[in-house]
Image (tube, rainbow, N blue to C red; front, side, top):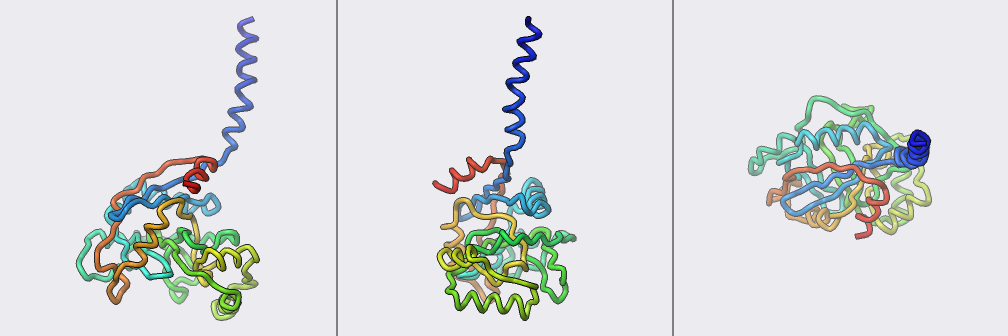
Length: 240
């Protein structure tokens, strides 16, 4: 009788365990900066970039790096390991870790306001659009009208030669109402987004800078913390 009860207990528990195992988890990064915290979710659709970012956060690679380049209505950029030296007036942006990451372009991941994406070298020396191992940016962007979006489509499909490039009606609506940087779509890998702290991103993007877009007052990442969350928990953070 005891054996039957034990077996029945297993049969009852297994379905719930199986459902739990199928529930996708997402990496969430709390980026603690000298100005406050930015909470980021990493996309599962870009596993190479996700796993690399998680690895660097766990290794504390980003501790002490500056937001070395910020541009109003465009983005804030960080991740240059050389910037840990905080040398006054120095232009940063050339530091790397000695490797690159293959591009992971997903049509559904686009440069809306608040996304996290990888910086990279120019097409001239990097025709495969490989991402920097460590440098990243967070999009601030601006709102666009349809005429402006038509010009973006023409430029990307023409001069930049991204074949069959077309902004979907859904993406157009986001760029009209929320904003972003559509001219970077399908050229730089988007691999996450801000869950909370976008007001801080905006403030950083507005600070006074020198001629190289480096903030006159140094702003840097103190440390990063990694956790895994369900989409339900992530949506709670979004709605705070």
